[in-house]
Image (cartoon, rainbow, N blue to C red; front, side):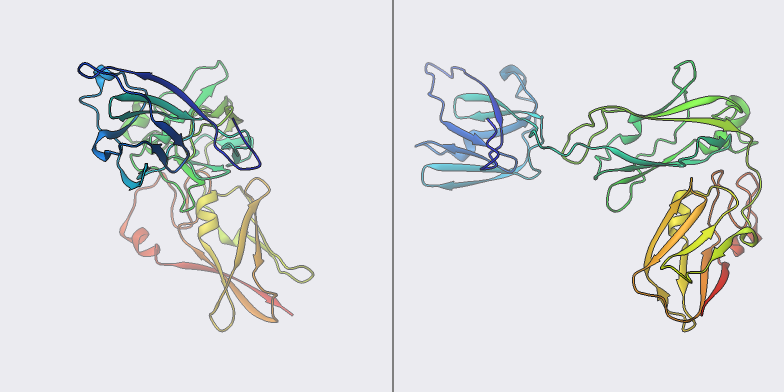
Length: 354
């Protein structure tokens, strides 16, 4: 049982004995938790202990590989520490001498389940040539086959096919909480074979839902408790490049924040990562960027108070809108040598604090 005062893990045992040769053996005392299992017995033969992932019948054990770990023996106690901690709600099979044991670590009542905290773009009306989504989770996710848990459905409830670029190595942020989901570029970019054969993923004026299925897991192997659903409608394709001349800056005169307004929603990932501020001495001003108002307003909060002077906002040319159009070229256009050369261009905006 749970013992909240002492933090003891609740563990379920399913045990039975089997006969080797002409005799059976009494079950030793087992204890388990997240990081190790302990056996108290007068005969501690480490080569007789193996642990397998899953509940595996005796007759199916031979071809299976035990999980890796280390064994320590101290007097009448043997401790097995797995290389990767035991997973919550994951079944295991333990073989010790002539005994087979099945065990599972139950999820604690106070467990902080994985949730979707935000999704970008967050607007309800989106261009038909939308290129990327970003899913922000409450804590790090298990990246294995993660795209299998993302799907789109139409207003009839049918799952769309060939929608996501399912990468072998998932595009996940360093902290493991932000997942990038590419809509298949070959269908979204005109004149490519997938686009000609299948058309774009989304149709104008149609309603869709993005579903993050509850089966997606965190790094502890625990799933979400319910599906996450985001509804949106498709509008015209966006085939106009962002232009910094349309960006409006509100200098931080009476507050601590710099605010930049865009004329359209911008791509979350490229916006957060492609802005920086320097002072007149070319030193970077550190702080936090936040994209709000359906990703059409960028707010910068400096780590320290502003000082009087001239500042520049430096913008990388790879800044994109929702359709993948950047400051140099349209996503639909062919890449030229001049486009490659322009990748080195850094766009600038200026503001003064009096």
